[in-house]
Length: 182
Image (cartoon, rainbow, N blue to C red; front, side, top):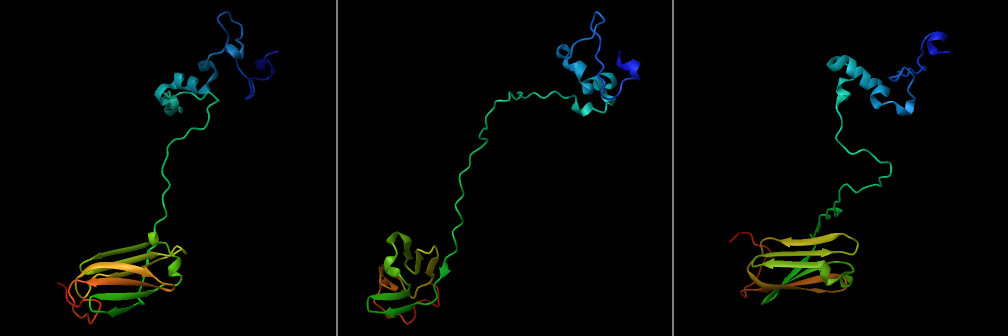
């Protein structure tokens, strides 16, 4: 008894086209074109087909079902942005004949590694940055010293750091910073 004899082909009934000899073709031997309603609709209606956009054949390799995950790209891990250094505003200084000493209070200064201390200087500029073990940086920046210097060094004490500036000329400094720019 065929599907048409029972009352027509319902949605679950499969119509299998006949082979060349009039017999039904088993589903394993049917071509993809015969099995695909999408392809059949495209062949019948052409550009007016509802599925016209799906007519493109992708020129990509097919998945073999065994492919392992692949690395698509590698990037380097970004370092966290360095925290902005806290500005040192509390310090003292002393004028001597050939030197000027700056006293910067820092608790636990003796335990700080020398690699964590950066002292940069120019003739009339000083920049001291200390990276503390807690991850915070402290910075003393004096962009305009009172007079020219020829060197700068630092020493660590228990609770303070002493920065010694060597004067170019043995003149008295009445202020650490200059009010006029040369």
